[in-house]
Length: 499
Image (cartoon, rainbow, N blue to C red; front, side, top):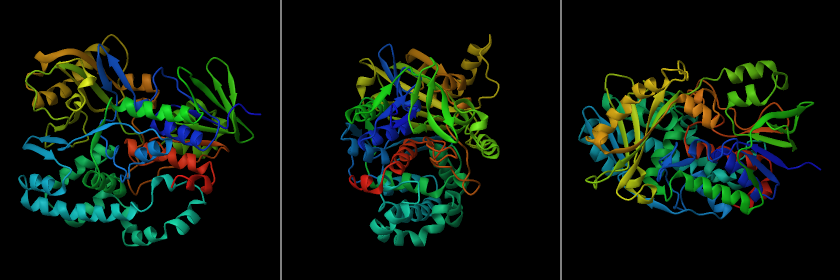
């Protein structure tokens, strides 16, 4: 008898969702996490009483039963609800020419855009209407019903054929990019840049390279659902998934580094840990990136040479510079929680340091910092190339973080006088603690120029989840990848119990 029915390598959101769902289906599941903290890029950590998110900070529909958010649907199935705080406006986009408040209410948002460009606001409304048609077509098919094998076809035809009919008029948009839809109606240069920015915040790519359903999901959820922040930060979501995994009989081992996926005669047999222990299972699911899975966890001979070469040649989104600050909060009572600062209108938004994302979660949850203080997480794109831990490393960290300090100064002018705690992370930090190749946030596969591979691999019993398998670098995409993988490993009848 094998040790487990399935082994999951990594406890990012994708890995936790896959392992918890399989446990809910009654499988014997082991999740192995190399780090001492679960959650992958979504983990939280604590420094001197400040609780920081390491990655995602924007959520929708955590407390809305009608939301399409795959993560919320999984938490319902696991019977692990979480508390969240709703808010509006969502945040502010700061351009050199002015600040745009971003509202969940579509009319208020368009009115705010009209102050920059009345004609552009009308064009943006037409663009959004097309996306909402796509959103409505997609919402009839819950993500928790999906799978990645041939059995999806009878499931769709028997349970969801009315929704399939609704999709026919927008079939082209589903396969296209947000830029294709933008080109139909939007001529205003400023609004096109705004759409590019929102696409970039979702996928790491501009509108012309971002798949339309991804933007449709974002527009639809923020205008139809609840924008909310989990009490306790992103770590609260990770904790809920871990509780769900254990509630239904699954096991999580932290500080457990997987050294190798074991393959025999084209099929997985289990894993070998760094300490030499071998654990057997007929199913292994890797939450590592596509590059780490195929170059570090497998031997070259385990994969067809052409497949392996093509997979590891997948382009990657750059890594990030991260700035975590603890600051004094006196006099900042009107501070809002989300900000995006574009520092130079004449520079592409994807240039490292030009677009800076800022989250101040203590605006909603004051327990994340000592009384009278705020916790801040700011980040911006940063290439991995050229980073070395040498005698100049600390100086380079400070230099490359200056764009983040300057962006924050637009929100809090006396920021530097308020700082009581400072921590700077680089691509090397990201690669080290999350064990991600080049510290990347996932593949940069442009719409129309390639497809994401999904959970299947050429090796029998080996599956993959996470941002290397689904479009988008956000939590909904990686949660969906875990659902698809888990559902594929059970019968449609087992999945139907939770629909």
